[in-house]
Image (cartoon, rainbow, N blue to C red; front, top):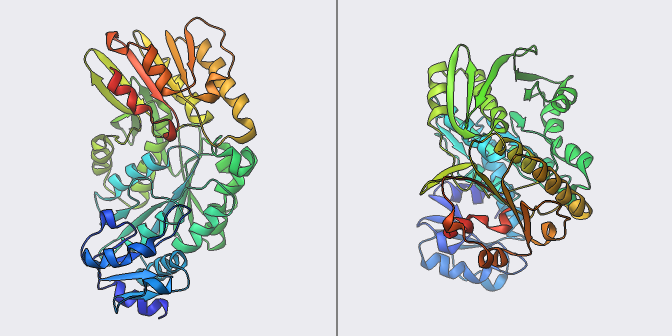
Length: 426
């Protein structure tokens, strides 16, 4: 059975699914394989649970008229997504970057959905599986698709673009993330810029932050639509007013008060405003969308617990985002405690980058800092206001956070550290 035939069957399904635990009836189940799982053994279970078809790549799983045997399930998922994207011809906005991808995607979706029927990446399903799933979630009612693309190696963004074929694209920034896979910052810039390469080759539009010299240099000879502050020549001007603690911006005389903490979120907001402007969303609707967006999923969340205010930013961390979070945290008033967890995927740079964060945090006006994880535990501490713990369990056994009162806490670390667990100690 070829892709066109599979697509014809897919159009009669309600959705696609790769996990029987979240399966919906009348869906198309893809029996993906991984190092520790084999979806083929669940194909029959998926059909019994209500799946209309199951895509398998092992003959032993091809047990009924509802199973479709292919050479490789993952390849088929990706080919089907690309076929579906061409079939719909929906305008696609793609975005990537080292930091702020998911927040920016959510803001863009909030703004554009004021005028259009949008379909956007759910959560951070932004890899070689998540991108196809996002495309396959789009229907003929989708007027604009928003696809987040993540990567930790070269050629991954190039591959995602080959599937999604974006008409528009935006790179949030180039930072010290996934250094191990990219081989350094230059590798990060090269890898993320694969989106620029695709868009330029097809003469499509790039959204550019004119305040970022790397973006300006990389896109100067290509079709672009820019934003920045009054010191630049921009297509759209958005000005930063303050972040005390939430980011306040000015756009066309409108004061926009967000629910996002930290001046590092200003560019994310400005990008969403700019893309809304490009797609002719009404100015008042843009303001309403930005002000109505409330962060979740451990991303710059503000949580009040008792007399304490908590800045929970425990979804991800790298040297660039950690530095930005600390510099913003120093601006908070009152007693300040930072609880910082290891940053992952830094390769040979891990030791130096963790020491850099320790040195920075120690110099800042922060009353007490706890460092959690093996990398931070190996760093040299030079102040009595700092202490390191090899694990969360060590931290938990030695700390009485329940006694904290009228304090502001920053909780930040890589996803694998699961630092949202700190909330249970308060």
